[in-house]
Structures are given as C-alpha cells and as structure tokens.
Image (cartoon, rainbow, N blue to C red; front, side, top):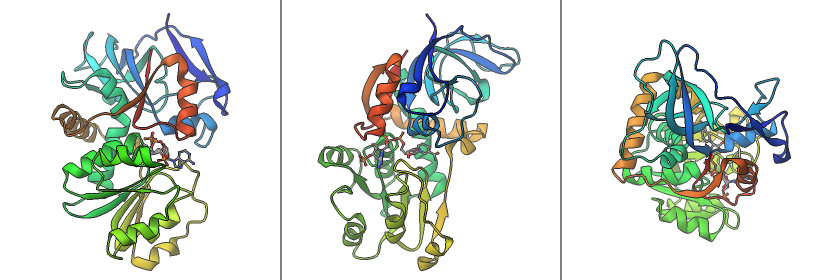
Length: 324
Ligand SMILES: NC(=O)c1ccc[n+]([C@@H]2O[C@H](COP(=O)([O-])OP(=O)(O)OC[C@H]3O[C@@H](n4cnc5c(N)ncnc54)[C@H](OP(=O)(O)O)[C@@H]3O)[C@@H](O)[C@H]2O)c1
C-alpha cells in the first residue's frame, strides 16, 4: 500500500504519523517516481521542529532527497521514460512510497551508482560539491577546517577535499567519529566536545589559522570558527545543528578582512546547468571510487521518527537511508 510519513504541525517526532496516499498523477512537467530509497537530512529536523518556516497548512510530508524508478510521465516532459532510474533533491515530499517530482529537478542514475547510494548522496553530495567548488574553492595543499566531519555532508566533503589535494582538519564528537573521519580523507581530527578546537587549529597551522572554515554547527562553533581563520579567510556558514548563532556582528569580520557566505543548496540546484554539472561530478566520483557513500543506518520508511531521534541525538554517522 502507498503511504507517506507526515506531520500536521511543527514539533517533536511524536508528531510524525503514517498516512495512506494515492500515487499522484503527474501534472505538466512532472514525473511520478516509485521510490526505492529516501535520504534523511538535518534540514528535515529544522523543518519538522519549526526552526524553518512550515510551508503548508495541511499535513506536511517531510524529506528532501530520494531515488527510485519512473512510473509515469506527465505532459511536456522530455528526457524521462517509464522504468528510468532517477534521483533528486527538492524541499519536502520525499518520505513517501510514491511522489511526483518536477522533471527539471530530476537526474538519471548511472549504472555505477545504486539507489541507496543516490538517496544517501544527492542532497549531501551536491552540498559538498558546491561548498568545495562554489562557496570557497579549496586549493591543493591549503589547510581548511570542516565541522561535523563524521556526519553525512562531512564524510563526503573529507573524501572530496583529499582528492582535491587539500589538507582538511575535521571536528567530530568522540573518538569513534574521529577515527571514521580520519578514514574518510581528513588529515587531522579534533574532538571538539573535549578539546578547544581553536587552540588545536592554531597548533596545527603554526599559529597562522586556516584559509576557510565550513561550519554547519552554528551556535556552538561560529565564534570559534572566526578565530580559526587566517587574514582574508572565508567562513562558510551552511547550517545550525546546535542552534542559530545569535551574537554574530559584521564587526567580527573586521579582525582579518574576513569573508562570510551563508549558502543554500536549493539556490544552486535551481539552475539546470549547475544541477547537471554537479550531479555528473558527484556520480562520476562515486563510480570512480573517489567517494564512498557511508550509509551509517538503513531503516524502513515507517521508522522515520527513530531516524530523526538518532540524528538529533548525534548518534548517526554518514548518511541515514529510509527504505519504503
Ligand atoms: N545550507 C545547505 O545547503 C545545507 C545542505 C545540507 C546540509 N546542511 C547542513 O549541514 C549540516 C550537516 O547535515 P547532515 O544532514 O549531513 O547532518 P549530520 O552532519 O550527519 O548530523 C549533524 C551533526 O552535527 C553535529 N552536531 C554538533 N552539535 C550538535 C547538536 N547540538 N545537535 C545535533 N548535532 C550536532 C553532530 O556531529 P558530532 O557528534 O560529531 O558533533 C551531528 O552528527 C546540518 O547543519 C545541515 O543543516 C546545509
């Protein structure tokens, strides 16, 4: 039976419920996908809790990435046919057995990439791509800092930075996560739950600091991240898993003529050219073995609430995938 996981209002995981659905008929420009794997992302938590605006006045089906097989094609769609293997990342609607996706947001899956790999890497891998190529392009031999290195985005970024020749310092909570990050491209890992990461970064860079910090932790780390930067360094603030940084002031950038970007994947992915280029780079890197997709947890779609609990409780590593 077709079903989805939805919430009627923002709140805890107790608000998530299973609802029956009828697979929708695709409208103009849309494709119906029978989903085989769905990714879980921290943005799903922000949306579920109301940290990001609640976009509908009815049950909201959460989830922003998935993979599967085309079951029907709407009018005015070119390039997709029934039976094609596809993947996507779009805001909401993914925690479902079936869903429609605008064809302009859909990409074909090559043979070298499994459905689970795609569901674990579309949103996180395209994020890693834009962070390292568009937000601040890492350079060979340059040292950068990446927080939450053992997370979904973090493990992909570590491998990609190593392939690009950069020296990446990661932060991670606990020894096990640190070992995993070291096995995924990071040259050094700091346990920021027990160590002063700013002092350690200064030690590791001979007092100079790093050229860029990629910070998705937010409240707990942003002030320290700015202190880790060298003159003309760049802070890329792309998330807030510990909460929104509430005491940032523009004057904080003056200490080193620092740059700040606050990017969002969906702005990049709105460009079809960018989506095709970045997806081809991502799938090519997976097929070539440059990127290994670490699926840390695999659960039935019906267990989405438990997957959220684990993500919020910092119990996950790599990607969590839900199987409809
Ligand atoms: N702007 C964008 O376009 C974009 C796109 C994708 C993702 N993101 C952001 O990137 C981050 C990573 O996303 P993800 O889905 O791959 O998640 P994730 O990194 O797998 O999970 C979040 C990690 O953040 C760390 N963390 C630190 N303080 C935390 C706290 N108070 N509560 C919970 N976690 C905390 C934990 O790692 P430790 O235990 O090692 O500290 C946790 O495992 C998120 O902030 C997400 O919103 C942004």
